[in-house]
Amino acid sequence: MEKDYFQLALLQFNKSIPQWYGWKTHKDNGDKIPNNERMQYKYIKLNSDTATLPSEADVNAKIQELKEQFDLLYHDMVADKGNKTGEWFKHIKAVKDANPKE
Image (cartoon, rainbow, N blue to C red; front, side, top):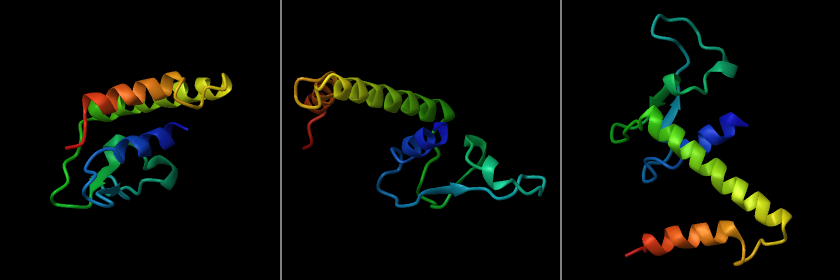
């Protein structure tokens, strides 16, 4: 599950660049990285010259934010508040109101 949050978090960066990142297949010393170990921050590789690598702290902060949003949504659904009365909706609405699209 952590890897899923990791992937979701990475997708929040460089949004205008499709497939901006991938995974290294070999360590700097030439050793092959097993497939089940590649999805780690230290093995991210940029697939675009215009993409910027977010800091590990920024990625971790985004992971925490996503976890909190999914937790709010889960609790609202369990409480039958999957509508505008739920805490998730209120949270998202506040963010949208504070950051209107121009």
